[in-house]
Image 1 (cartoon, rainbow, N blue to C red):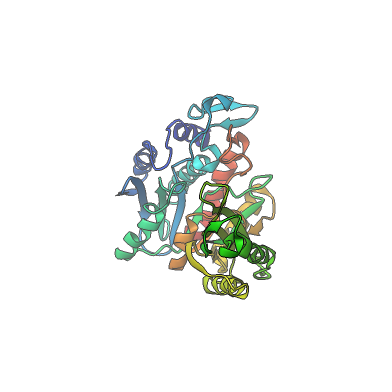
Image 2 (tube, rainbow, N blue to C red):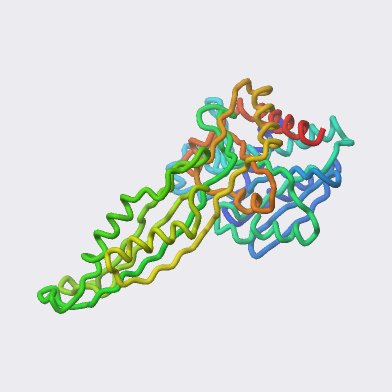
Length: 374
C-alpha cells in the first residue's frame, strides 16, 4: 500500500505542465530521510530535481516527469481528475499511468533498497522534471549540460514511462524513433481562375510530387526499428477568394525514423523527388528528436532478469511509441531502458493504473537497482 499512498498523494497535485505543484518537494523531503541529497534546479518555468545517494560509478538514475497533460473536459471524467479514486481495482486520476505511479514505485523501491543495502556501490539517483509533456526545453534537456559541467555522467537510466501493453512488464523500450518536421513552400504565380494560362497553380504542380512522397518507402527499417514513416499533416493555400489561383502552397510533414536513415538521407530523398517534378520551392527541416537505441547489455539484462524474477514473464524489447526524455540522456553514452505500467489509458479521460500492479512494479524496480548497485 506504500506505493498506492504515494501515487495518490502525487495525483492529488494538479501538476499540469510545466507546473510541478509541489510533487518534487514531497519526494525530496521523503528521500532525505534515508540519506538522499537534493539539488532543486529551476530553469525557466520548469522544476527539475536531481537527488542522489552514494558516490562514484556506476550512476543509476531513475528518471521520470511530475508534469501531466491537461485533463480535458472535466464533465467527461467519472471522478475528478486530481482527486484520486479507486474503483474496480483501478486507481483513477490524471497522471496515474503517465507517470505518477511509476515515480511512486521508484521512490519506494529506492527507500527499500537503501534500507536493505545502506553501503551499496555507486550512486543511486532520481532525475525528475516538470517539462516532459510540454516543450521539454527546460527539463531533462537543460539538466544534462548541468550534470556534464559538474563531471557527472549517468551510466544507466531507467525511465518510468508507461511501456507495458496488456500486462505489467510485457514490453520495455530500449530506444525510440527520431522525429523530423519538414516545412515546404511551393512557389506558383497568382492569377484569375478564368485565365490559368496567365498563372501557375502550385497546388496542381505539387500534387504529383506529394503523392510520390506519400508512396515512397524511405528505408526498410532494421532489426530494431520499423521502416520510416512519412506523414503530411497540414496543407494550406488560397487567398480567401474563390476566383484566385494562389501563388503559394504550404505543406508541413513529419518523419518518424529509426537508425536505418539519417536526417541527411531523408532530406536528400525529399529534395530529389521535388526536383524531379520541376517545382520551385523553399524547404526547411527541424529535428525535434534523434533516434536512440540501447545496445549494451548491462541495463537490458538487469531489467529482463528483474521482470522474469518478479513478474514471471519474458519481456519484449521494443522501440515503438512517440518520444521520451531518453532522447536527451542516450547521446551522453548512457544505457537507457523504459519500464512502466500499462499505457492504454494515458492522456485519456479516466486515466488509470491497476492497483494490483503498483507493488510488483516497485519490487521490479528494486530488483533492477540491486542487480546494478547491490
